[in-house]
Image (cartoon, rainbow, N blue to C red):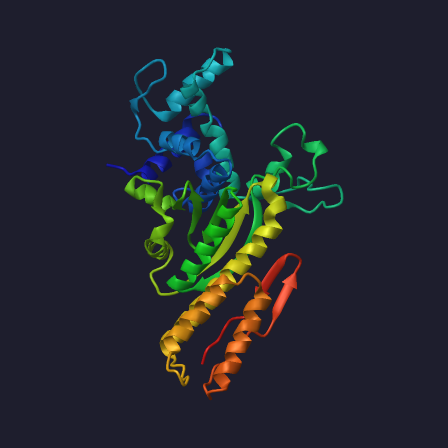
Length: 365
């Protein structure tokens, strides 16, 4: 029996051949994968807080046809036949049911998928001064077509996705556990929807945190007739294992990471970045101190190195400002030097961009 991914390809081919609405199959370069476009369509649904509609459209597109449809006439039809029947009814100005409207929404859904997955250069001018061809995709061009008020808004206000973070990242499972927990806890504290895109050379997946549950959206899950993996934040280790098994079969994972929020929340981006960097930096320092407590013996005259290490760990965990952490660890370094113990704490620079605090890495040795 064909899986959802195979049904998706078959139905897009059917629509392209029989609906006279454009050759989506050719434009989407099928039967190649759709991981990038689908992960961003899911991310857009996450930001719109309407994943249910995304799933409903995907259910129609991944269903095995011919099947018994709920629309009139009630009989077994190919998807293209169902859509053509509803289009004819719409042209005759008949009222359409909610189910029929959902079927018709497949066309703009495929248009959005095409814009994300296969962006093309266009001569459409971004502004009066810039006449170079732009890459037309849903991120760059949606602000021009969403509604008739576009002429009275500032550039970028109506973009479907507001990107607030983008950079490559490489690390182990532990590194990603710290990184993702910092993202989830920071953005969740702002109580706004967000979407994280993880992209490698050959694959892309989407991550988010919805109703206290972590989600991994991966188009390849359709091969097992699902759409995403879901688990609570307490299962971070299992979540990371699933992430690594999806993208790489190795101890290290290198990806490009992009974080998106809604355009209406873009004013929170500076505070969000600040809190995220601080949370992640503190998590790394805590791990370094914890590792040190396991690898080194603090030869103090009262022989309580374990208690001292736990105390240091607790103090660092409670600190909010990077300068406080730096000052405290420098004092600990002096304490260690006083008993001839080699501890190299290298927090060389603390760079403060507007609203963003970054710090170097704590190195023990």
